[in-house]
Image 1 (spheres, rainbow, N blue to C red):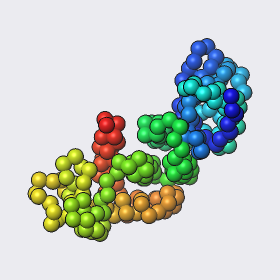
Image 2 (image 1 turned 60 degrees about the vertical axis):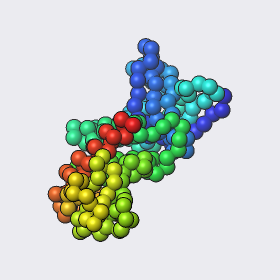
Image 3 (image 1 turned 90 degrees about the vertical axis):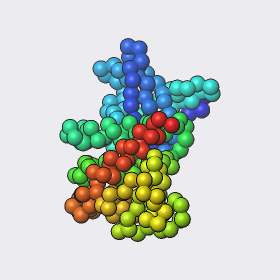
Length: 239
């Protein structure tokens, strides 16, 4: 059995028997993995806080061919997310992030961009970034990296580039964007405040100070963009 070592983000844990846990973790170089941590449910165990949700940990594990679960040998805590879980609203946001990562990522498929997105979002939340803004930012990029988020800046019919201030429409299913010329009159008008905040998200890093400033400037469109994100998330889950 080969021994692997990888930096990972802990997603979820499940009880296994009286003393063990099944751990779902997202590694930087080998994607999402599930493994058994022997003795992790005991009062005194060698894992401590390193298996808490969203913990950034370095994991050593054995992987046996044709086995779904690896065997976790050791875990070193690199960064604890406990500060997030001391605040109820931030804890809820963290749980939603975990759910999206677990839902969107297939097993054993490396996604370095998603790994960096999770780490950046956790750090921004810890530094006081608006929960609403961080959540919306994370949703947009998670959907884009999964290939689900539609291009809202190009008409899907005539390929015209659409500036942030130009009126645009979403066709049935909300998966295709149409310009004024290509709109048949039966499509949904995209809220005018959505393109500016989306443009900002796609071109800026999620940093606490910048995100707070952007929230004040684009706050009106954020709720509408979040609702669209939730629609696309449901659409992805039902595929």
